[in-house]
Image (cartoon, rainbow over all chains, first blue to last red; front, side, top):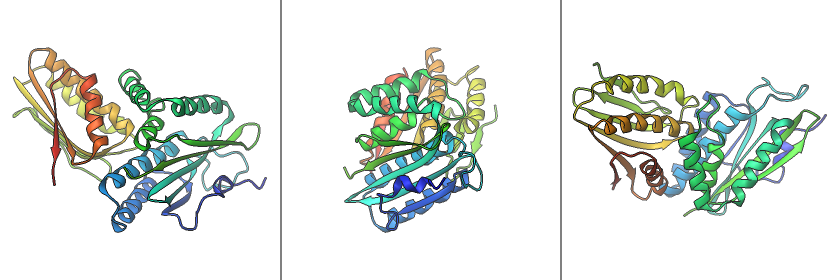
Length: 184
Length: 126
């Protein structure tokens, strides 16, 4: 099968990207990516408020890959089968778009789609209340806290989260998530 | 009771909790992949402190960034402080945020609405 996660980002400006990475996402990779982006944002003299928002959204996006990427499908080329993903950060107008792609098991697609649809239909106030409710009432697991990362991205960006699923085979689906951080 | 002092790293905050003066501080960045592991010794230390807290405990939170898994761990710290406050001991939480950092201010307000402990929002003007 010739499908690659890159196929999901073919409409993005990868060549001019501030950050582009495809591979296994471990703690060290995340540290390096954050360090690189932080330095680039300082060099380009972005306003502190935008810089902080971008950094926050990037942290949650990368850690989503780290905690929630399912194993790559059998036969898909990857150095290691776990925690495999792709991240692109591009300059869009005066803001930034952060896109991640990874594989999810088909059994998780419905729940994830419902979660994102609910977030996108909610008002900022509803997102805030939902965030506080999960924060206060759910137990944390090794993987985090019941979708709090997605809610945080929605809250910090103030925009709807763009997402797309593409069936890979009967067991695996490729998943793309994009959020735009605009200047405030 | 020995203080708990942890040096900060690019992903974890510096910690200084001292039972002698009742001043506790969390400072820096809290964005580790496994926050539970990082905050566990801190909460265990607080469980011990709760057995005989000082009349007044002051907590200074000076965070530049924190991720969502840390947000729950920080809430667990605050819930222990709330218990101390309920047992008729003074507890004050100072939540520092940088000028114009509305997201950090909002995060402090979230905690303030959940935790029944006096919260003071302090803007750091550069």
